[in-house]
Length: 307
Image (cartoon, rainbow, N blue to C red; front, side, top):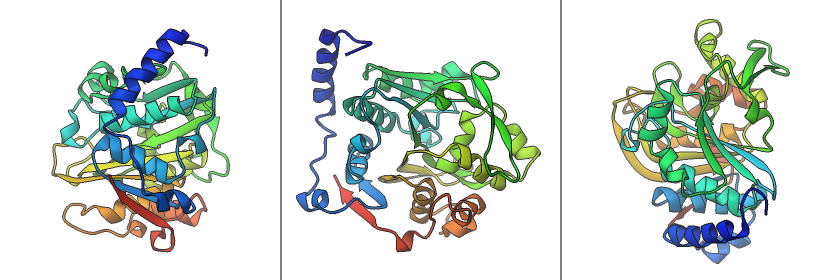
């Protein structure tokens, strides 16, 4: 047991067991017996739904092994409270961090390149405070140029090079954990769009390139091993910073496939009062066409559970 004394670790385990008791999910036995779905949708409180969605995919142990380093990428770019729907619910992130540690992760980093003041974003989003309860996890906002490394994007024909957080490149597992929200430039902001928060210069994606195409290109390099989308509430207008209309859905979507997870979330939310098919979001459509994932959720195994 490195990094911790055995006493500290046992104390944390006991505390975690108590604090998570309300969120632990006992799924129906027939759901365990079946093969894992392409997409899991769980309805419930943020913590319970997060745990249930990952359990439907076979549990965190399918994604994280003992001793590995994990990076979780939330939305915490804005110094807004959770109820505004601009940042990932803190209980979603702390539950994911706890599940990674339970699966044996040596280290869990929650990282974002915030758009507003780092300290205020970490504090007002509630994510830093929620993750203090999970030893071995660290919440950090990183600003360029320190800690970013130039990377070529393989097979990209458009956005071919960028600078990525070193700790992301050195991690074993990448988990995308965005909140579902409207975006003024791209229609929606979900897991694919969220990868922009792991690079140094995202402005050039807006002004130097076609934004949708560069997002799909970026996902050739930064492809999450697990995507967990917070749809407990969705900001359906005036994103990404708000304030806007927030709809409570009390759901969490999980998948191994970023494109599929984004497509499922798009299908579930009435964006600015309209239902929009995933194909209308260009970067999702490109991700599907380029073989980065699937947006045809009607042909996928989508399993739901209420907890």
